[in-house]
Image 1 (spheres, helix red, strand yellow):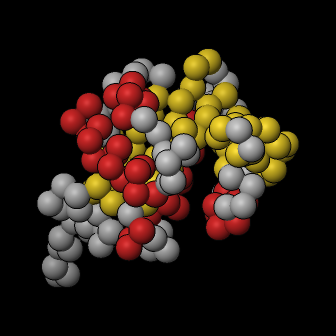
Image 2 (cartoon, helix red, strand yellow; image 1 turned 120 degrees about the vertical axis):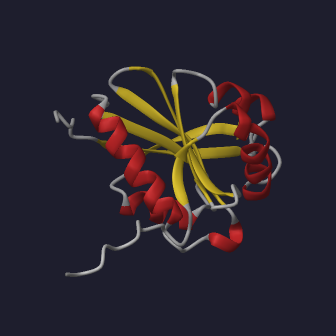
Length: 164
């Protein structure tokens, strides 16, 4: 008889819901990932990690280190916005962002969200390529989104509701 396999643990950590206890780690990672003016204020994380409007998922190591996270907000169905997606620089290109986005999109579809959008810097070619891979299409430029002279590209995709 074949031996029963041990539960599979992903080498890049497990996806977990984030909460108020993760505010400091999320804020620090965001400061590392984005330049001043684009990185969020700590208050954004204090709000998002306790608001029923937000979905916050993170990838943590067995020791609890936050490797990456995604935060989405839906102020009214059927639309949601990606607030941010952050991955520790030394853990990039290992599928963390893909795993977070796949789980987030699945949760949104189950909650009857039909459209998801985000903003990305026009010069962030890597981010735009990643979002295109996930089915996001460029829609329009938002002038001064990140501050004076710092525009953002709005990207969006439709979701098929999951009725299961």
